Length: 460
Image (cartoon, rainbow, N blue to C red; front, side, top):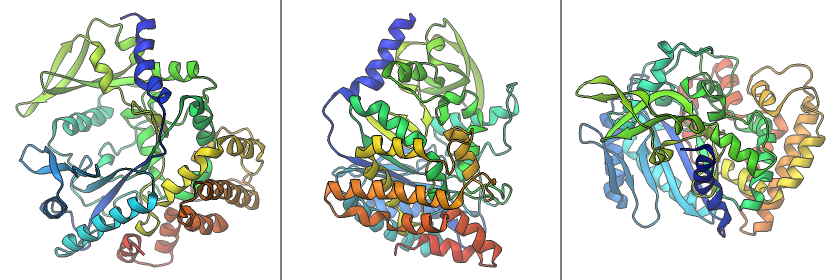
């Protein structure tokens, strides 16, 4: 396939959907650690049974089964809510069908989590609001026995064999214990570039407010999720993860960026195939690609010809990720304490109509910006427990508060009274703290891990 044809296909998949009239909808996905309060490894039968009880009670319809016949994904036929296990039975995900009101989504989330924790509690288990499973060390880290997840497990393990000039961390099983809070918002074509630019610039502020994924092996980090993605095989091509190295200034630049995003998997004859990532613009020009697939208890090599339909398997994991639905998926926030679960969505919804003001505010800032660091470098700096001296802490506090004031203004203009969801963020901004920082400080002060697990699981 010629390059101009590939560009046209990418335009139709990613840009064209934003040309359609868009409603103001919000979609939310919350991944949550399953925790055995005894401190021992999770017995997968416990979360499986709890999910099965929710599926029966709330009328969800099964959508996917693992190789043992266990339902790992089910969808509600009326509201589109989905319950699933993400990569592992240690990590349960609620994807809430799109709505216009956060209040509606919060009520459904609370109803499901209350039910699930009641069921899990019968066995001494709980779902909690943390970005890293606090018992990740002892839990089984095997991926779900499903074609896609077997492929992903093997792909991430290739860090041990592929000769690639980059540093890989020693945690290729991290998807079994890392949990995110993601938001999808509709975007119009004429707002696409300003929105991506503004939300990219605000990522350092989000690091201050939302970091909540701590690992004892990485004690300096409050958000290990960034590092786990970037220094895995997902990060071989930096265009697939994290932040934009250069903020796109036009649709053409954005399309060029998408065209250099790598594809690393596809399907042939019912089998998922993975291979060393190849930029999609190069992949579709090739006659042959060599990959690997799982079947009959082992992995096998295969040589296949790329085809146009493989575009369905092109996935970016950018923090500001343009999807084929005509939405931007915001992916950088960790799972939050349950009582603050709507803060992530409220932050993004409130700022969506104020991206020009947000951009101006950040471009004029001197508390963190204008010291020679990019937005991506600043996010990495502010993800840490200790900040360098150039960070003006009082100025950073005022910057965070000003960003929140913009978000609050946006929520008030929508007129649904949902600006209240931002209040926990104001408290964090005043103290320049995040749930991850509070967690680490509490552990240092002698608070038990079990107390924190229960506190972060509280719905009020």
